[in-house]
Length: 150
Image (cartoon, rainbow, N blue to C red; front, top):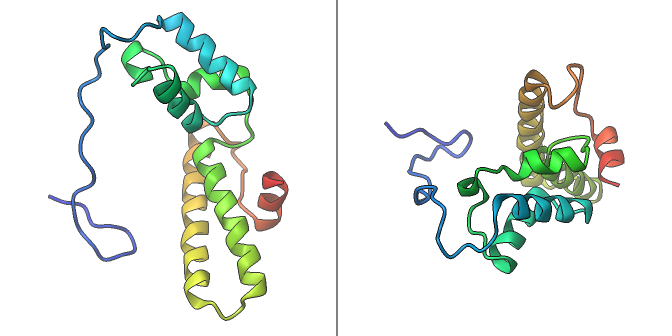
């Protein structure tokens, strides 16, 4: 059975599956070296996704999980973030869309998109509060989001 999309009334399969996680013979870095690279890049202010891209493109490490690491776990030991990366990027989008709505009041499509985006942020916030990555009393508000993004 194929799951339906939440708001678009569409069905369909998602993208292709990743190949099995195995360590390639041509990877020259050991687990400890990759972990040090991740920590160094995290100190430089890179996000988890950027770290994964840099490791893939510049260091030739195609999949960190094949080595037995997780980028987010390694970076959380170095840099303490207020909110996880995925919810932070959604909050950035919401702040930009809110600024757009302040200038263009009649943009109904943008207003609907902002409602959907804020709904997604609230759902994700509840999930992270349950998992302990956010405080139990965490609530989304656009004013707090503007302060967080600045």
